[in-house]
Image (cartoon, rainbow, N blue to C red):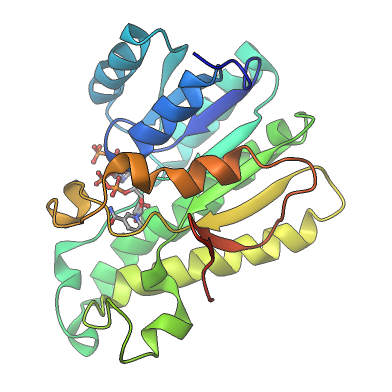
Length: 246
Ligand SMILES: NC(=O)c1ccc[n+]([C@@H]2O[C@H](COP(=O)([O-])OP(=O)(O)OC[C@H]3O[C@@H](n4cnc5c(N)ncnc54)[C@H](OP(=O)(O)O)[C@@H]3O)[C@@H](O)[C@H]2O)c1
């Protein structure tokens, strides 16, 4: 097992399954202590048990990104146990059932529900953990976005996923991209780097396993951004092949 991330503490939201679990596994297998964020503590413990079985230092943190109380208590717990956070991966995300309609027919509640997790959750978790990321020598924040959030791609009729016009989900990821750029500008004179990652169409529960990429492939961009060197970029949007257009 490589040890290049030894001493680093990484929190991954929604890490009990899917791409988040795989990001935790890859960071943990390089020596990081991984905090498995899970809204359901039992599902989180099962995932952490599996990671520990592979000799990864894994702990569970109960964290529902749409519940400020759990966010605040997670931040307190990390502060008292580690005094810092090196890597935050805002991975938790949803597609609401009501989003599978033509954009004009989507219910406002579907939009609110999706934004609670995908947008407000990302901001609330980042805001609560920023003081601990500032205590790291090289804080890294990765926001799981999607090419479905790219305005350029959504405007292109030849885009591979041109038929996937999910009003709430796609626009929530556009908002995540905007949050990424705005925070990067604010943090430009700090060691912290914040970027958005597109995992590509990956087989997980979120798409009923229709994705054609494996979670190992889906985690590549996020893990790369979570471990950027000091001269790495900030405020960008990347998949594993490079820059994704906004
Ligand atoms: N799969 C793809 O093709 C794809 C493509 C582009 C972007 N993404 C993004 O990648 C990220 C991970 O998705 P995935 O494909 O791995 O989906 P997934 O298998 O459905 O996993 C989603 C994770 O988010 C958690 N979650 C949902 N709402 C939460 C909340 N309020 N608080 C805390 N955790 C919550 C889920 O927990 P529970 O188990 O408790 O539900 C689960 O652990 C998402 O942000 C997604 O938008 C995925």
